[in-house]
Length: 321
Image (tube, rainbow, N blue to C red; front, side):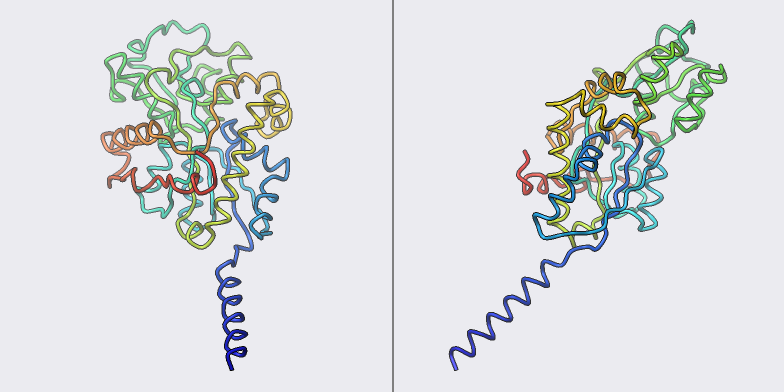
């Protein structure tokens, strides 16, 4: 009888473990055609994401979707179409405030020189205060929008002192080179692309005013159901980050087509970014500043608790600090 009981107990244990180890059949990952996604795209090209998932016994199909910016990515998350995404701090917080059920699981990259307010090369604008009354393009709700507000503050201005024009990055490139706008707040790789063409110069970047934190978000439902897969994603991301630091030229070669940027230009862009997925104390402070800006600018109606939004445990559980 005792032996029968032990056999039944063993069967029960195996059943529980197997059930608890159920994995998603598909992981939907949202990226952007910007170098701050380089870590995960290197992991994609190297097959490291599949390797890390296999280590925890998961073999899901991976669906990659690229978005032009954070706001349209938010719409896709709101529709339940994404599991993990990479975007700026500003749209991530806006999405959370709007009720999108996500959490920040890591930092994709940061770099104050990776976002900037630019003006045409021959523009007479030499300082932020000279933006008064000018037409300035920006992706509204992007992290460059926050930078623009901070740059204007340096000149004693607010967005009420300029003509703010909501444009996509692609439309900004056309508008600023054709003279339809006087300035723009943008991020890489557009800064380097336009500089290399001799079309623009940087009026001000994030140095000293905005760290330029970009985040990895995941739906709470996905993390709850697939914690081990989520940690496998973070480990794959870290492998990509280490590769960039050790092999910047090869990293640029591998991802140049993803960003439509020549490798020699991409190397310069990657040097502006610090890739490390673990959420640090100064990242939390930067996110809190961004959240405060959005409330003051009425970009969000409900406050967002950054301490609750940012999950610092996942990276630690993944062996990354």
